[in-house]
Length: 261
Image (tube, rainbow, N blue to C red; front, top):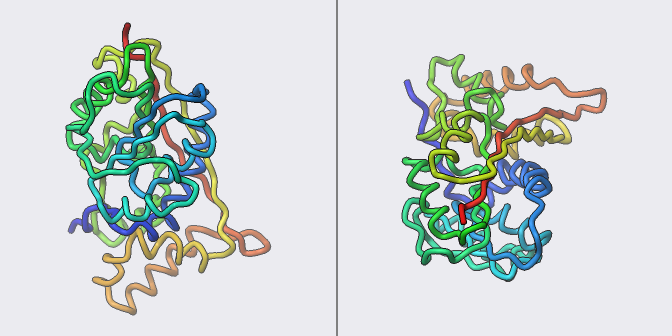
C-alpha cells in the first residue's frame, strides 16, 4: 500500500511543520552562498515564502521574485511581514515566466526533488540568470535519512505502507546534484552538507507541529485505535530529555555554481 502523495497546499500548516526546518537550513545555506547586497533573486518553488523572507531580511536584494505552482501557498507568502517587498506569482519551475538573464541569482530551497524533470528545471534557472550569476539549491537527503519527517515515515513503513516520496527523490543525493550542475554547464561548482536540529517543548508539541501535517491522511485512514498506537510508537522513537524536550537533526545536501561568461 502506498501513502498519499506529499502535498503542501496549506501555507500555515507548512510553516508549523516544514517552514521552521526550512529557515534553519536556509540560514546556513545563505551563509555559504555569501551573496552581495543589491542582487536580483528568483526563489523557484518558494512555497510559503520561508526562504524568500530570509532573502529580504538578510540580503538587501534589489529585487526578489517568488514562483510556486500553489496559489494557496502564495497567499500565505504574500501575507508574511518579513517578506514585504518581494513579489510572488504562480509559475512552473520548468517554464519560468521571465526573460533570459533577468536575475543575478536563482535558488531552489528544498524543491528540486519535487520537479518532475530536474534537468529541465535547472536549465530554466540557468536561462534566467545573467552570465557570471549564481545558481544554487539545497534538498533534504531523502534517501539518506535526512528528511525532517523521517521518524514518522519509519513508522508508516512499519505498517506496511510505502511512505510518500517526491517524484525526483534520487536527485537529493550529493553526487546527483553535482552531476546535474556539471551537465548543465555551470562553473565553479561546490557542494556541502547542511545539518540542522530542532527542539520541541515536548512530544505533544512535536505531534501538533509535525505529525498532523505530515501523516494526517494516513492517521485518518487507520481509525482512532490504530492511530493512537501509531502515535505511541512514534513517541517511543523520539525520547525526550529530562525536561521532556525532543531534539533531533535533519540533513540537506547543497550545491552552487556560476553561469558561464
